[in-house]
Image (cartoon, rainbow, N blue to C red; front, top):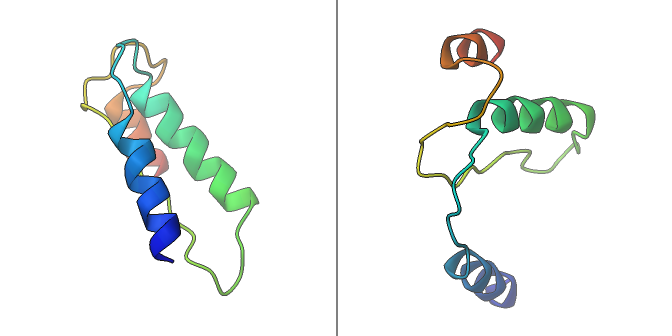
Length: 68
């Protein structure tokens, strides 16, 4: 709905970057969570908002790519 869209835009507009990004770890976590919580007949997707600078992940980009 347009109300949901406006709420989403307002939320995203209020996000602040603070560093300490575990981008690769969180992307893998999101993928695993989604696999366990698939909803039939729905759009099952993960949207990641990031500056792309992973600073604290335990896995590498190459390890993440292999698992995706």
